[in-house]
Image 1: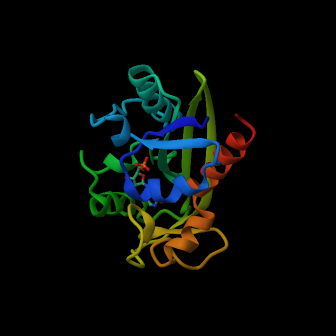
Image 2: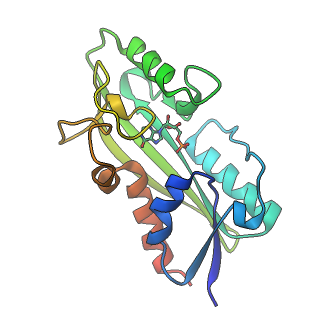
Length: 194
Ligand code: IMP
């Protein structure tokens, strides 16, 4: 029998990206499929804390094994900000334009542009929690370039590349992204679990 595993996201793009990678002996279910429609709280002050909060919420309320992720942009000269607050940096909502403006404003005149995207996945399997981390290092440029992707993509150039994430094809970004790297570690782990 397959081992049921809930992916704690309602983001269709993430589902599409992750679902095909999960080993066959797991049956992935979405929040919708288990009847979870509520907003899961994200009130921790670290990526690890938020990912675990989400996974625990599902485990405790629905009694299912599951995993959840949280991502942030960590800028060296801003002491790691916006970090866990990346989605709500400039406003309460997910205003990508305002968030980029705020970051560019704070970095105005600052030479150190080093930044990284970091994804943390928290997995609860048979009641036991594990974490998987994916990082992509890069830099923040001074003005937007490209119109693919989302979030901070137009101002982030990964190390070893000359294009921003927003100038790359999604397939290219997905090969090197923070999320892809965290998912690869999760998949390796799941391959060894029954
Ligand atoms: P989430 O945890 O995946 O929802 O990500 C939180 C926030 O981080 C998003 O709202 C974006 O602002 C930012 N973010 C996450 N992943 C990416 C990415 O791949 N490119 C650009 N911004 C991202």
